[in-house]
Image (cartoon, rainbow, N blue to C red):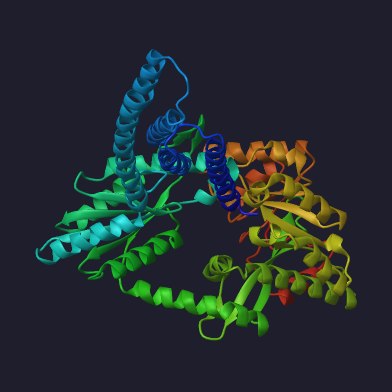
Length: 570
């Protein structure tokens, strides 16, 4: 039963009981012919009951001074009821009783009720102010929120329309915030947002405004801008400021930001258009490598339309089988033999022609269709392995990339098992590559899923290692077969001693744990020689081969299964 209904029912019972007692007392008094004014007794009894009822009701409002005042008043009225009975009490006690219950109690009651109403009004004003703050300010950073900044920007637009000055709108988005949040937890993520908001406030001018739109997105409104250079200067200052590490709970964390800029009136004459165009520019900054800013121009609209067409075409592409695979070989550094392949997706778009993953994978992740695409790739790889077996060609291991969305889906294992059973292939020829960030999102879940994959003889490759925030101890815990060193570090060979030291350390650590090491993005002889000297197991990259169609892979495998030494000579 509803709690409110129970409380109301209890109150009714109490009031009813008091009325019964009042009238029962009246009949006893009447029967015994006691010398009292019966009508006064009933009236004062009813007044007491009403006062007591008011006291009970006041408790719900939780204003203690009003409740105490009404309670004292109710006791005073109860004393009046008792007075009517004419109890045989000494005169001095009757006088004291009248002073206490009529003068003191009633006086205190009036004071408390008056003070209670004053406090109630004060608390209401405080509550209204608090509600207003919540309505117009972000609860976490105390910055103005989306609603507040929109109201202020609308006023600024009206003011700027009557002058020759401009307004600058900067959309600021923290890069890789989700990774930090998932790795270190929401408390660290919240602290990062608070400290980021402080940095933004310290960078802008006193007349400018910074607000939090939500998540890791902020907006800055630059007032009284005369030329574009002012906006660019502040954007550069923000990017430079974010190069400094954030110290959160004793942890040094680096995060950059991407900034999109629109300017009034050139990039829009109203709030919604300016926001939309700044958002478009911000995503363009992310596409261009993050940690930079972009000023909106009309050509970006064409890119937005293109992105929309790509998003709408993804599901159709699955249905019409417009996706196909190319394969990049992995090569043993010592024997120069092809040891495996990485399957890489391509899209033969009916309008745009050949599309590479960097043009559609992020969109697929945003729309959620990436899970279906991953499973489609697994199906294509299974069919290719089966074709090799049927044609008498010995298969090589093929690695496929698994997105975080699919990996973290509850039915992931069941859906993988279904595809494997339908194709009836030797699963030891399949590897699954997951990023270290994916593995770290939920460590217990990841360990359980990886162990289940290993039961199917599927190899586990940890991709992009060293680019996230993972703990090295999980290499010992997770059943990893291959550690892939990211191209980011390979590019530093010969150029950066720190990158070389990191690579050497990763190779030695992996080997001590019995994990094979594959280096990605090898493009020069110097890089390969460094890796060979430091006993890296395998590599892949344009130095040996770019991703190529399956026909070329088959030709290479058929050419010499035993003696292939690679096209290059040393």
